[in-house]
Length: 308
Image 1 (cartoon, rainbow, N blue to C red):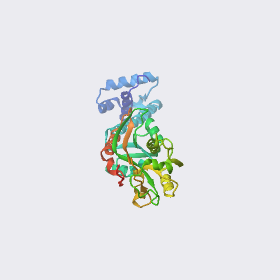
Image 2 (tube, rainbow, N blue to C red):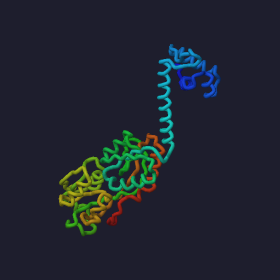
Image 3 (cartoon, rainbow, N blue to C red):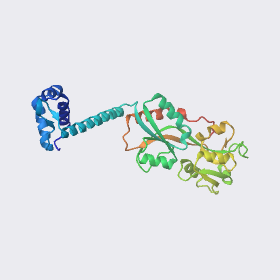
Image 4 (tube, rainbow, N blue to C red):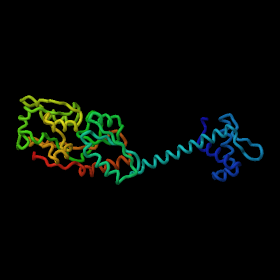
């Protein structure tokens, strides 16, 4: 079977359908001699007759029927491949996987929904997780694009900023500092804090903001792996927290949480679209990427912040 080609299979199918070499040659626009040579070459190669030549017409043998069956499956597979490759060329269709850090989930659904409305032929799959989970997904190339804070630095990535990402300290509205202006962060060292788990982007900001102080860092009462639970803990009076302002839009608007006016805050980080630096991006993923980078800022939560 080393000399088998698609032309050989095409010949066998054409002869089987037409019943004669002459008719098949006319359909394929080749000479009858060429088809005869192809059939003989293939029969010699497999060591079996593919056609019964009695009765004036060529009829498939059992071996020939097996060849036609395989040829039909190959033709179907090649048609599917053509469709798939055409989709890859089409910037408006295909499948895109997006990784969303748990903090970005407060605006990502609005952004993705808006994109999906304008691009109904692009199927989108979304994975939500903490920073470590989404970084691993980018590293392992199981997502095409990730929405996160600072991009990872331990493997090659391509990243672009699409909007500001402020970090603030929040408290319940009845807290003694709730209405104060210009709070020095050293005063916060006497407060209990509810913070995110090690490895989260918010935890990294907390450690950086309070690191290197002469006074002891703030007392940590609770360490929690969910922004929602952190907010509930703060509202219940378990402590303050340093958190993304984009996670508290509803609670601040409803008066259930307040942003403290702390000197040096908000810390203005950035939101990034990130992808693996060695991953070839598909046209559909490129369309998604361009939308996030150009329009993503417009879907970020709107919240009044203390002046830096």
